[in-house]
Image (cartoon, rainbow, N blue to C red):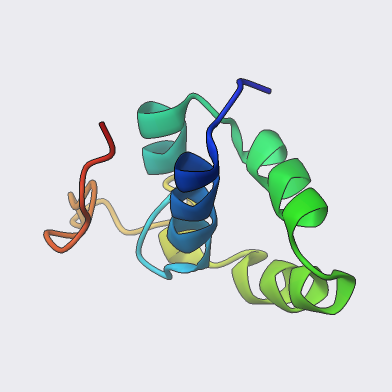
Length: 84
């Protein structure tokens, strides 16, 4: 896993919780594959919060590009801020 500063870790967690942000977007912005995001979430969150998040995102079409509708071309929310 790449070395992320606390601000970047917070942003990855925020993006991981967002329903419409696919894991591909996190990988493009931070270089973390889905398995690495899961590992980071497990490390940074309380066990109960992690379980709730996993239950929420598992199989969610909007989190997995391969499962989502081809008509959705959104890469990131227009409200998403850039991290420098």
